[in-house]
Length: 214
Image (cartoon, rainbow, N blue to C red; front, side, top):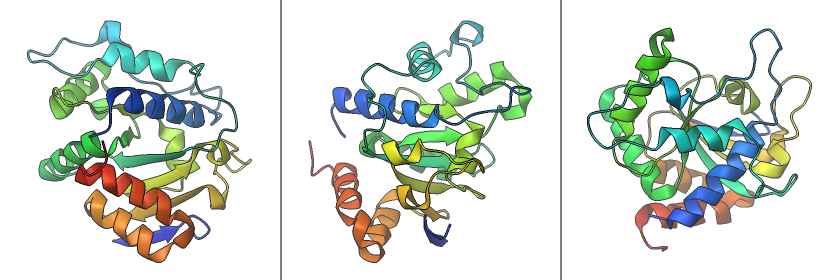
């Protein structure tokens, strides 16, 4: 487990929606080479319909295909993300999803599972199930927040983090990251104890996670 300062390296439905829209705006600020195009959430019209109730993938896609009007450019709002991969153990992924539903964290993946849009949609639906969790595909975010291994928990100030430099990275003061297969509550507690400037934000998300905040 690696604790990395950026310099070196259940809420209400309405709250979840607004937070996810703001993070979509921050992530969409990352430029992608024209040759590859901007990665996005799988096209919902081409995804198979899961047998059981799953996440509203169409709604997820619409949120991240365009800059939401409620996201004011430069507005510095703390956001929580967990970077994951389907290569992680099933138990780890299930724990991350379960905690993300409580904390409101957005799950970020690097690319398509098995290079298949259809398979990716099936895997996301199977993983998330009927839980209120958003998962997005955004490879540039890994560089933006200097994520080199998964899982990794990132707290970012969306306004500052959207000001990506020529190297594709967000300013060092705009985020903090904890690498390693640890629980969100452990990572947030670590941030609170070792990074005073992020302590209040970490406490806020920890409260959501524990259920002590409505």
